[in-house]
Image 1 (spheres, rainbow, N blue to C red):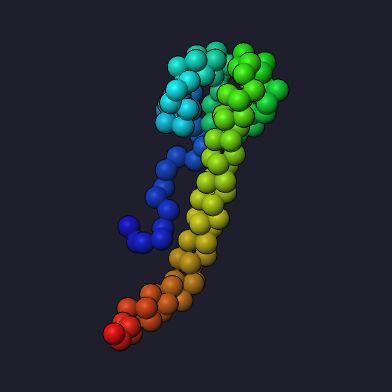
Image 2: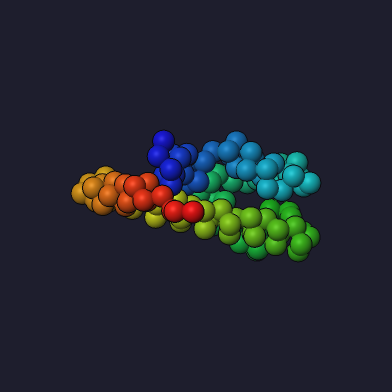
Length: 117
């Protein structure tokens, strides 16, 4: 793949419960077992994960404020990564449909003139 291009992974909106549990294990390693049970019970998929709020987490049985805040912080980072991914995919789309010569030109310029030491 070309440098600077996003690896195509499954968008969060298409995540299954299993995908969400994997994400929990990676981003909330100390509490993931407790969270996973609650998330499965409440059928939290990727789409639902992106819409979680403090109140929803509390209703799901996650009572400690610090735990809820940690989960919400991780979800926020995930949302930002998804936004960046979407923007990069959009710009790749425009680059391949007409702007590809511009990208090739800018890469060519970078490699053609190495810095003199």
